Image (cartoon, rainbow, N blue to C red; front, side):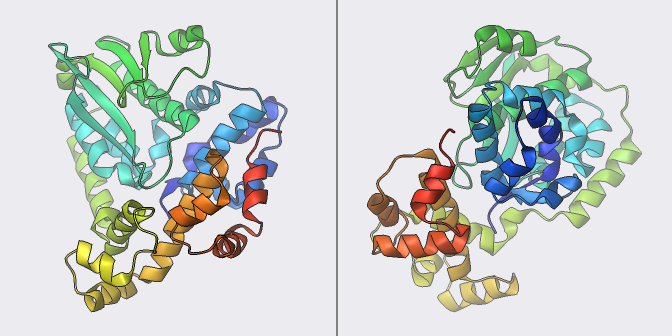
Length: 340
């Protein structure tokens, strides 16, 4: 199983799609997201499918600001148990440290952090929002949903836009500039190295009226006990190694080559993967599946090249694998993702 995201990220999706004249259930089926997964905020869905669906809905229903609209329908509570720890923090710095430490509870492919100002301004810092592109491809709509929600959460916690200097986005504008100005209320810069909210450094010391050390301690203890960091799992480490290795050689990565990169004996790696209920072949299959979905739905690469990038010796092997993953041919998967 590849990286997931809490189904709460689709809160407001169904009514918005219906408002736009679309069929939310049809889109969920198309991207192999079970409707039952969205019946509870705690459900988990494949983040690549989630993001590709948002981009497709925005394109096909002519709604370039889909991500921003979804952000309006959501709030900090989509983070589940993490939200309580954030809301009970004493300061902005404390809340950000908590969110940074446990963001994997919402999705292990997403992270937030505090970094130097990308423009180099004195007294300004960047509150960054990143997606690990080794885990899942970049999605403009999902990025606008994430940074839009990050922005709204910051306003709620701080009680206004005081201290916010600008918003940075890596992609080009999806909507007219006026839409961004209305939503964020500050300058928005596109083509930035990383998505971020640029704020005055002094805001890190701002205190929250709802601070409660006891609630925060209990919330953090609950998170630490029930949500172990997935980065410590050897299967996650193997997934990252395999994602980086695909396309670098003609042959698929082997158990021995992966073990060597992780400084483990092959038998040790095999045993530790078995303890986590998986195997090298299973993780490789997941990585290939996610990469194939990305290549087929977001690029026009020839099928032979896609097969080579995935480490398949023949194009027919790609076809067999895609039929097993999606119940359709590679060309059918590509066609289904095209605008209608």
